Image 1 (cartoon, rainbow, N blue to C red):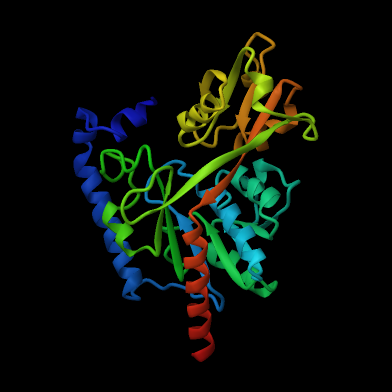
Image 2 (cartoon, rainbow, N blue to C red):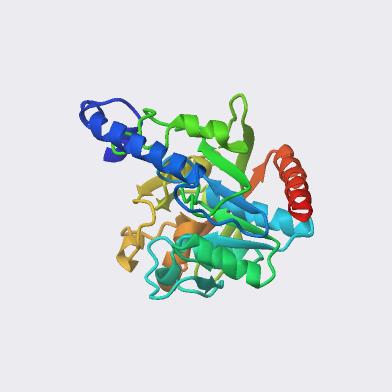
Length: 330
């Protein structure tokens, strides 16, 4: 458990000491949202429906796999989705950037490249989500899907999906910096649907991240099953919001794991994939985006797919029909 996790996911003397700052942060967050809701801070509405997939906690909850699922689901339903994402830690000098599977993660961030590789639809990365959404509309997209951005109120949205880590939930239920919350838990009362990555609680829909197999990072056409890694120990590498979830997934497949957790969005260097032996190194697809340029034949990737409750798709399609009817009548 990291230092932050120790203070964010339980009540400690440090989190209590930070409580005044947490209360101030929470007050400012509530005030900002109220100002947007009252129109005192300007928001921009798109001429097509906008779906935001986000969360109220810092760190990973499974948003990006759900966005990939949603984009493919909408395409199959006859829509032309366009994805917008912040491009977190990208160093591009101009935004938004049209992301392709070959775009450098250094330019637009790891999540943007992952979305471009697996969503099958156009992806634009940039901190100005309004500008990115406008560009998608100009290029013929009929629905905008925002990867994260629940707190980006300048872009008005029609559907909000909040993703929750069913294991860690909301930690000590305090706002930053005393806890992991970007917004109070009460914010979830206003979203369209809450999706729990794992076992859902009352009022939530469930989602699982299902492993679909392993592929070699240096030679992606090479595939493997879990059986090929069960004879000995493997190095498991994860620079995501909740590395333990990845390690647990590998253990659930019967692998004997040597865990190597890294900070979320960690910029890997070649030496960090070497552990002084010839054991396989297994990583997440998000980390693989950054490690591919210097990966050896020992590096493998566990591919996963989001599989939400079937009710999620049904509810989204029904809501989209209502939104479009309202837009046509206006």
